[in-house]
Amino acid sequence: MAGIFLCEVSAAHAKEGTVDVKVADRDGMIKTDVPMLDTVYEMPEVGEVLAVLFEERSGALQRGLVLGHPYSAGNRPEQSGEQIFCKTFRDGAFVKYDAATKTMDVSAERICVKHLAAEHIVYRTACEKE
Image (cartoon, rainbow, N blue to C red; front, side, top):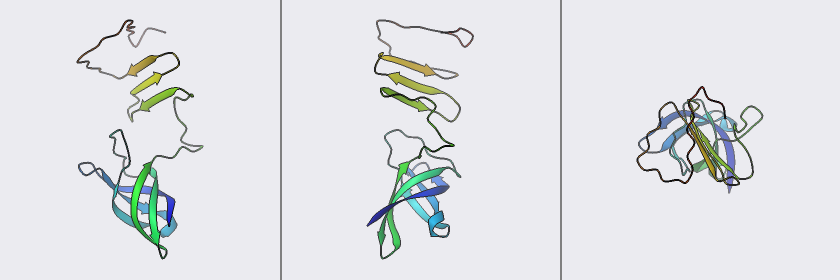
């Protein structure tokens, strides 16, 4: 049997792509080296809350897998929409793609581009309005 638990990150192991988590529902039990299920690399910080899927046998938690950050009343997506893909970084930088308009917005303090081919490119400084 398996169950989903909200857990707090107690340590992050960047090289291994795993975390140690505190399981509040189990008296603060620490489960170590739980792998991240992610297609984009970004390790969580200590104290962040994650949804973790654990296998349970006879009431004891076995192997686990971090599913990701759950949205809640206090943690809503900054960008949303049916055809929106958005990745917002901790420092406020983001990449947003709107499939309906086929438009990609990239915002960061510094952007490095190795190859760019597009029919239409719009460049705006931080002071310009859309």
